[in-house]
Image (cartoon, rainbow, N blue to C red; front, side, top):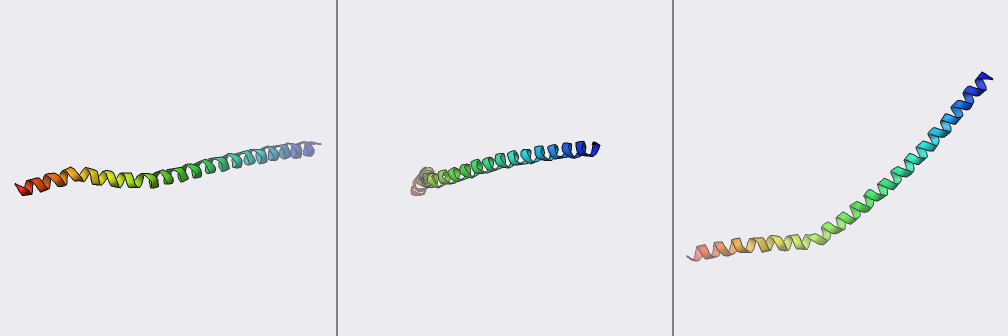
Length: 74
């Protein structure tokens, strides 16, 4: 009788651990999915912003180039 109780307790504990592992795996899969989605969206945003960043860099250089040309003309 004592052995049966011990085996039953271990079986219940194993079932609980199995259930916890399954829940943990489900949560892990959801988090990975969210992070992959975020990564995809961030990459798309970076790609969309690249022309604006390049244009801004050129725009920021224009006054410096103009000042250099005006200084060279004097």
